[in-house]
Image 1 (tube, helix red, strand yellow):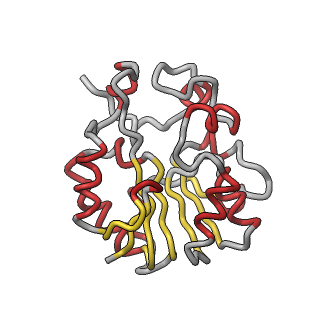
Image 2 (cartoon, helix red, strand yellow):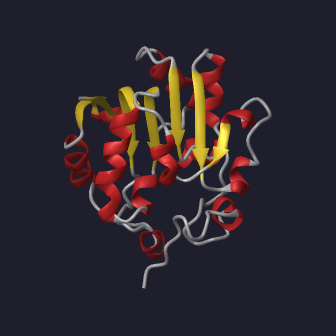
Length: 197
């Protein structure tokens, strides 16, 4: 039986230090992220890419301790972040911490229409129930002015079963892209960028 790790049980120290089987092997830090993950973990380059899209305001849901936000702030982007984990948010640098709130995506309805040029959702949607995906995607469309960056981090075939078991939506990249296309227009699939229709 799957356990719901989203909302009821927050992603905690065990998850971010790699002590939980589904957590970050090697811990959540810049070195392990750039080595083991290839999506928005080259923070300086990724921040420049985002800035070059003409982005002045940015929200990242699932920002952890804000490594990418830190680089965006240096470039003058008004960046804000949400993460559900108090543990990892408290690890943010002093420059970034004031811009991160401990919040779940469930609070998205509190944001005004077209509040941000770009809304970035990092992996979060794999942990919500599938019957709520349309709601969250319609809310992302509502609050984003220009673009969204959405990716789920589809479990690879060689992922440990524990990783798959904590996700509530285990679907292929193709399935996710078809779902995203119901709400957004493809801009740059290689970089998971979608234009708000």
